[in-house]
Length: 206
Image (cartoon, rainbow, N blue to C red):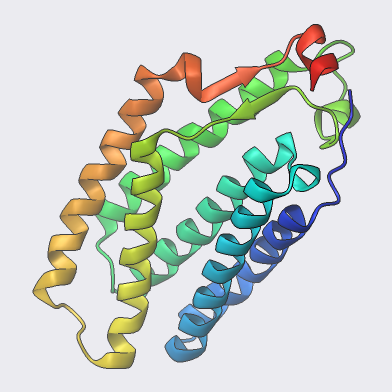
């Protein structure tokens, strides 16, 4: 069964994804004020697309359950890497976050493959309108995303408001590392409930 992927939430996710390399370039160029403004705008689109998807059934899509967190993770990963290059976030923390996200993306690609009904072709694999699975993030994972966003936003704002290397940023590093490890563990523990695979009958119902 196919679904309509041309929804407002998915369009907003696409805007976040498209703006991510621009934000990364601006951070590397140390244009922190402009970067911070774009990150705030990206956060606003995230809130709006979530509100629309929750309250309007015709704007919901299974691909959106993957696209939304993927857009968030891409933006967060880009910010962590660029801010680390600029010396605002420690390398070990960024390495931990990238490793965790790489594992989750790998799991997502694998789940897409095993849930795809025959024939398993590249065109069908990347056909976003073909429903095969739904992602339901764990509570700690949602909290971790918020904490990571708080850290990158605070780190991005640090050069603008002159609080680079503040003790509170250091505390936030440790909090972020802790929630990152806990969120990874939660996906292992709740692996049967975080990803819902659709059988033929399930797809017909959806």
